[in-house]
Image 1 (cartoon, rainbow, N blue to C red):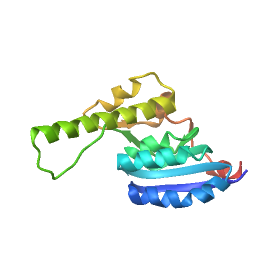
Image 2: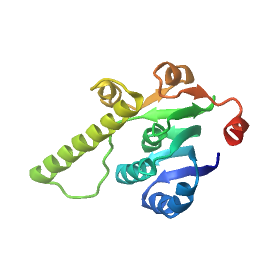
Image 3: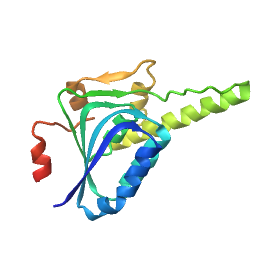
Image 4: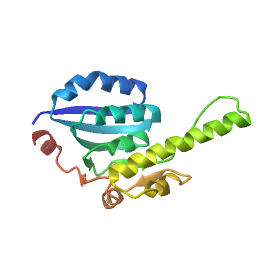
Length: 174
């Protein structure tokens, strides 16, 4: 069985999306996709593009979280049918953050607020769908004011991760 290994390191952004897009012909030739993630996250727009692109490849996907798997990268991790996490991985989910230097009036502020709600709803839906959790399950995690960091035991008990990465060679040799 041939595997394509996709390295997701660094910020989730348009450049990462383009890099993955150009790898699609090679991904399609493989039987399985192995995604290794070490990222602090980034842009939700880029996340959604990468997520949809990879799912549309119709491959068995295995994800591995190593080092840091946070924000958008933590959502991308959920794309895996099988999801491994290394013992020392830092895993974090949080609601959308919006940074801007724009000048606001009431209408613009309301519009941006509504956009944040829509983006959060997309994130909730992805998390709930991939983890097969009931509606509004993810909202409890995402509605916190602070970041939600998870221990290894929490990742396993909540079924965010399906297994602990003990021997990476097994994944390459299957």
